[in-house]
Length: 61
View 1: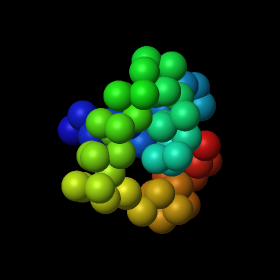
View 2 (view 1 turned 30 degrees about the horizontal axis):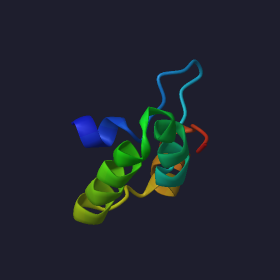
View 3 (view 1 turned 180 degrees about the vertical axis):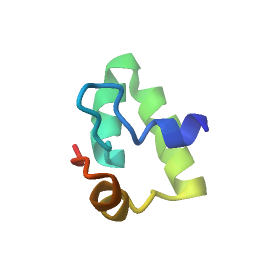
View 4 (view 1 turned 90 degrees about the horizontal axis):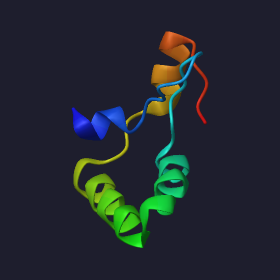
C-alpha cells in the first residue's frame, strides 16, 4: 500500500502523481530518498496512470 500511495495526491481535488513528479517532490528530503523510490519503481513498476486517470476522471501531475 505504501508504494501505491505515492502515485495519488492528498490534495483537493485529487490527482494522480507520475513517478517523475514524485521523484522531484521527494528530492527535498535528500538524494537518498530519490534513489530509494527509483529502486521501488524498478522492482514494482509504474502503474498505468493514463487508464486510472480516465477511469476516475482525475488529472496526472
